[in-house]
Image (cartoon, protein in one colour):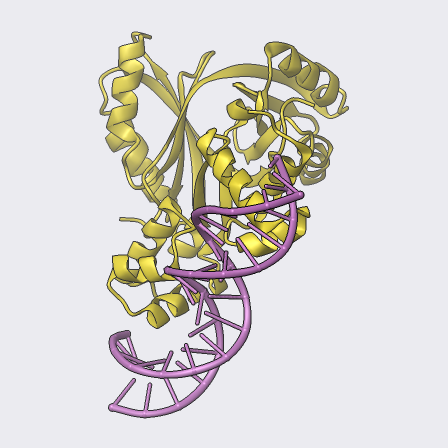
Amino acid sequence: MTILPVDRAILAALQENSRISNRELAARVGLAESTTHERVRRLVDAGVITRFTAEVDPAALGRPMQALIAVQLRPQSAEVVTRFLDAVVDDPCVLDATVLSGETDVLIRVAVASSEDIRTFAWQKVTSVPSVRSIQTHIVYEHRRGPTLTAGAQ
Amino acid sequence: MTILPVDRAILAALQENSRISNRELAARVGLAESTTHERVRRLVDAGVITRFTAEVDPAALGRPMQALIAVQLRPQSAEVVTRFLDAVVDDPCVLDATVLSGETDVLIRVAVASSEDIRTFAWQKVTSVPSVRSIQTHIVYEHRRGPTLTAGAQ
DNA sequence: TCTGAAAGTTAAATTTG
DNA sequence: CAAATTTAACTTTCAGA
């Protein structure tokens, strides 16, 4: 699918607010409503827009603390990684998990009410998986989003 | 603000799809439309929902590769960290940046077209900031989301 | 805090240029 | 791709429980 400048404008507007009406979106990008509607549908169909979602602040729900837990696994096999993810990623304190190259095999981001909850997750849940060789916990002090995603490599 | 079970249902539904109509949301959570409408408004006002957004797949825009760049800064001061973030976080390849405790001070997540772009960002942009002492680049092999965020610590 | 109904607004599909 | 049209669906407000 070819991404035109007008598609970038649509992507920018919808990332900033996915709930604006099709009418307002059309006005903002300077196309007819029917055209705008069709282009949004195509962006979804092409997999450029993966979902429309509401962002929720864990802190506002009583989980003001975030941490990264770096995990080293042994043996290092695809199956071990998959099994580890399946074992931990559904825990309610997990925000996401990333599989990496390098010393650390998996990086887990958690949001919790207090450091006690990190301890419980890290030392009860994570280290109870047999293939976990070692872990390190890092407190998240700040998190910043990059620029809005509107185009390929510049 | 008190989060009732019905609010969790609203949060779950809106995270899964922020574009469903208020009518459908009301039907799904079992409340009248007017009540549902009011509760969503309150969740936004209370800062529980921070924004409604469209998730975009960088790969579908021609940036199929992601990496984490771990950065160590010297001297380690609040101002150095802030200045570093200001210098790199607006680069178009940056998805987000996290300030951490531990060896690594900042973790930058990037989405790029090829490894050549990582090299350019890491060795042109990042290491050109004087306070950067060292960096390590890790390829992202896989990324998994945790469960939907609906409540405080369980 | 909730409901139900009324009034105004918007979406979605179609047709035509 | 735009404009116009039409029907159906939706949002928003408010009186009242």
